[in-house]
Each structure stands twice: as structure tokens, then as C-alpha cells.
Image 1 (tube, chains in turn purple, red):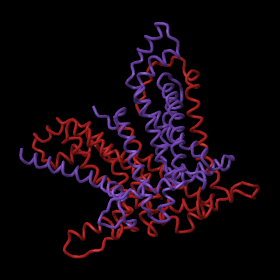
Image 2 (image 1 turned 90 degrees about the horizontal axis):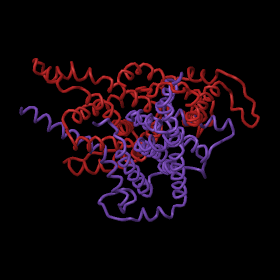
Image 3 (image 1 turned 45 degrees about the vertical axis):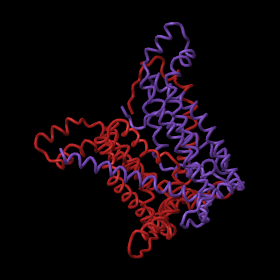
Image 4 (image 1 turned 30 degrees about the horizontal axis):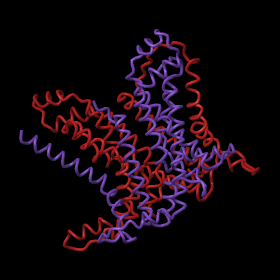
Length: 262
Length: 289
């Protein structure tokens, strides 16, 4: 039918417009980070000056290292704790299990503004205070539910008979886990880890409330710089961040189908 | 969440506990205890730190209800949440439909990934990128004036529309994702049956497609509305002085004014509003899951 073909063409065009809306600002920001004019004036003249001056900015570099360190520790911690919890939720039946599963959603659903300010109050009250350790505590808690949800989703595809078979062949609990279960759920574990890294590395709100001037992360440093006034240097570092975080999620998509694609 | 307790109650809680305890202890220390502490502190006159005197009070909540400012700002934030959610439905739903029912195969997979990719990238940086587009002498201004025969001044930066644009840009992938999931599950034969029985395209959309994809719409709406009501960074960067909302006032209590108990009370009121919204949406959400 002709109408159908016209409607389908319009649909494709529409998706194209949506993608333009989603990506144009990012592309423009990236282009401007290579533009000579510090006030983003056209015509465009190529330079890498802003990237070069990034290396002179000790504050940004220190914040970048903090962000990376926290993201790596968050990833490792939440993957280990989260996978263990997912295994327990998969293997065993007990009272209150549904409550435990339901408890994973408040950390995801409650706005980070509320979680962040609550952490600030509590950490101050118990003497942990602010700083990198507090940020790490917070990031792991934010990442854990994502890891558990992703690993649990992978476990749903695991046949429990495999564990039974290994056990009947004489494997102990540890051997069953390491040799049979873990290899099967590995894509889920890797995807969960990448999610955890992204949650931590891109986290702004919670880090913002838990930072102190010397102990801060890259997004918090960028926010402070934006509020002081835009600079092409911030453009440059923002471009690097967005490229890294998108590359990370493309990698994640190799291990985890976001949308239940068949 | 589907619960498929695979190996039925082999040994229950005692075996599960060592595996569960670390994760849930961590969540308790860093999420659940802080949220409880926030409720507790919201009833105090001052933080009980360094020996400062403090007492229990309802004053922080009284401040919310007696000073019209906070209520006005909460309403402004709820309105912002509503507007952003509506725009996300208007923009996201058709896109989800095209993805689920028009595109096929590898191109569908690739475009779907492209749509949701920004959502998982850095939100702060994406908001910041709009500053370059919207400001006077920015890209939008330059581009429009190059095309149009007359001179117009586009300076959307630091305005309410700028905040809306930034937030819709941030959250529309969520709506596409949730609607796509429910739309994809609709059997094409249902649509064909409706058409062959004489229903027009519009009737099929109204009677079959929209009702069946309602859970996705509601899920998307809840997942967008809640964080937008609590947003503060987006209005700060794109709204400037016009960007004062409930979230920015909470931020101020903690980083500028240092009235933490009032901040805690304001946060808790927001949490209560959020929980009511999630509770209202949850029957539909559960049906979707």
C-alpha cells in the first residue's frame, strides 16, 4: 500500500530528527572544543590548544584521578558483593526474599538529591564526614542494585540442572560455583561491572554533596567551573568524558541487551 | 521482577545469609540508615555536632507550610516535572512505535542503541552542551540568522524553555525505552485483525495500540517525573536566575545556607511526594513487569 510506505518513510525521518536532537548538542560541544575562539564564535578555526592546556590544569587532573580510582574500586566491590547477593537470591528460598528484592528499587528510584543529602547528614552524624571515602561508600551503594538486577537477569537464563549435575558428579559447592555457574553468568557480571563503572564515573549529585575542596571528583570539578563561567577547557574535558562514557556503554551493550531484543 | 526460585528451599536463609549480608549491609549503611537519619534530623533544631545544643521541633515543617515560598517552589517543580514528562511522551512515543513496528533487523538494533546510548552517558556534560547551542551568538542563533532573511535574536539561555529543553533531552530516551518494550510485545496480528475488521489506523491506535502499551507509558512517566521534580543541576546551569526550583532550594540549604535540618525536612517532604507517586504508579508497573 502506498500510504503505508509513505507513513513508514515519515517514521524513519522522524527517528532521524530525534537522533539529531539527541546528538547535535554533543557534536557541537565537541567541535567547539577544537575551535580557536574561547567565546565559541564562528567561523570555525581548528586548534588543539584547549586540550594542551588541560594538562597544565593540576586541579582537573587530580579530580580525574580521583574519579578513576573511585570508579575502579566501586566496580570491583559492587561486582563481588552484588554477584554474591544475586547468587543467594537465585539459589535459596527463604521468608522475606521478596522484601529483599523490593529493597533494591528505592536506591534506583529515589532522586539522587535526596539520597545524596541523606548520606551527607548521616556520614557527618556518625563521624565519617565528607571526602573520597564517603564518596566511595555512596557510589558502591548506588551501583549495587544495578549489578544485582543485571546479574539476576542473566541467572534467569541459567539451568539449575547444571548445578545439580555437577554436584552429583562430586563437585563441592565452591567448585560448582566457580566452574559451572560463574562462567555462565560471566556476561552478566561484566555488564554489571560496566554499569557500576558508569554509575560511579558519571555520578555528579551524590559526589557533589560528599566532596570537600581537596577531595572531589571530575564531574563536581566541572560543575564548579561551569558555574564560574564557561571555558573552552571545560569543553575539552567534557568532550573526553562523553566519548569515554559512550564507548563504555557501547561495550556494555555487547554483553547486555538493554531492551530485551530477541 | 520475576521470581523464579530455582532450587526450591534447599537450605533457606542460613545458606543465603553469608552471600547476602555484605551487599545488604552496605546498602543499609549507605542508603537506608541515611534516609532514616534524614527523617530524624528533620525534627531537630540543630545538628547535634560539636556539643551544640539541640532539641526536637516541628519548626522545620512549620516553615514549609507557613512560608508560601517553599510550597510555591514545590508546585513549580511538580509543574516542571509534568511538562517535561508530557514532552517526553509526545516526542518519545512515536519514536518507540517506529522502532518497534516499522524498523526491522539490524538497523532497528543499531538505532535503538543509538537512542538510549546518551542516557547512560554523563548527564552533567549533556546539559552543559546545550549552553553552547542556546546562548546568544550560539549555534542556534548563528544558524537561524544565516538562513532567515530577517534578523532575530535567539537567546534562550537562562530561561524556562532552556530548562525544559535540557531536561527533555536528558530523559526522553527513558520514555523511548519503556514504550518500546511494551510496543514490541504487541502481536502484529492483533493490529492486522483490527484493520481487516474495518477499523481505521486512528481507531486501531486508540483502541488497540495505546491501551496495550499503557504500562510502558506509565513506567516511563514515573521514571521521568520523579527525578525531574528533584532536579537542581539542570535548572542551575540552563535556568540561571530563572532556574530556582524546589531542588535548588534544597541544594542551597546544604551547600550555601547550611540549614541542614530545614534541608532534611524539605528533602523528606520531596521523598514523601515521590513515594506517593510511585505507589500510585506501581499497580500498573507491576502489571508491566
